[in-house]
Image 1 (cartoon, one colour):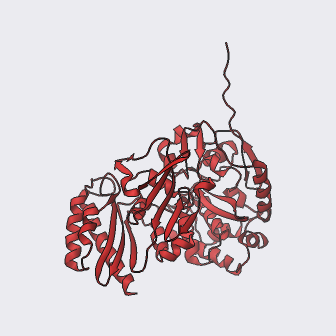
Image 2 (cartoon, rainbow, N blue to C red; image 1 turned 180 degrees about the vertical axis):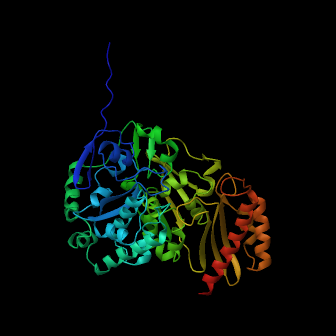
Image 3 (spheres, rainbow, N blue to C red; image 1 turned 45 degrees about the horizontal axis):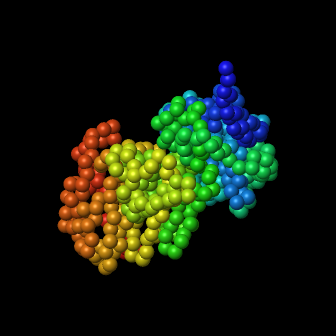
Length: 474
């Protein structure tokens, strides 16, 4: 009798706080479980396990263009395979001989009560200190938009964030890691991490690419909510760090986005910022900082949610997709991808490689609107986007999309056809809304009744035209 041996699991290596660790545990295990139950660092808390509460927040540092960059993330949705060769920081890694200045600010402002959420807030504020963002109170508060506190009250936390921002105002052009190390805001060993990562990256010589992969994972922000137990032991091809799927570039007047680019990459892209001057206002409606840091553009589209924010965003831009299977590839419009609820025009062995769209030209205006029960970190009740080109007071071209009103993300084609060539008047908008109501089929659920969603879409269409006309006047 011959006993078949299971193939050896790939060895995952990364720096955890100030120590290099390696493990042959399944690469699909989430980072939170590894840190708490195998490294016995229990300061990071288990909360919702869905990326909603921020109690599990950690920082991950990696080298990008020879620069060390830190991002906050939800460790309950992050597989070990996505931190291979990187630097992971937990609340324990921020501790110093006494309270560090971030912890001291939380203490001074009475910004903690039961303490369960406090590690996540401290880690998120540490991420702010390690970022290139301007040292403003607004930016410090934005850094904790993925952290929920159920007992303290946010005003004391906001005051603590303001103190942290004040700490960073002397940074000027100093590299963040150097500044926080030299000024004892964070432990001084942070200053040596860049060199240690360079050595580690050279030794690893690449990322994990199992040949027997049966699952593909990008950022994991949705798939780990849906299939946590299945993915834990599954052979996974990790797409998050695939350089062939990264980048946001411009070719002529077309923007090309790699499927593994994150929402944060989108927000920070000079190309996107130039052509979408109100991009920051749109992006802040999409989830929260730790989720945006790991959620991929491709994952948002392939997830096929009827209320996917980026899906609605890109539908209005008439985006096209490149689907690839080894050396073969095909291009399809995003509007043709969705064939029914969670059903795609995509073969099982096809991979989404990139998304592209024409950048807005002169007299083309873009608007994105979303209504949800919470401002941050919530799924939309209804969301909608509009890309409108004006010629004088007439609509030359327009695309309005809507989510939460049908089994699939919907491009309101009949509404758009009606609006082309018409002047923007109250009567025209009212008639367009009436047509839009015939194109949707919302259902009543936890996010609102069907009638409520119909009302929301009508209001969002009005909001689009208010925004378009306001921007056109300027």
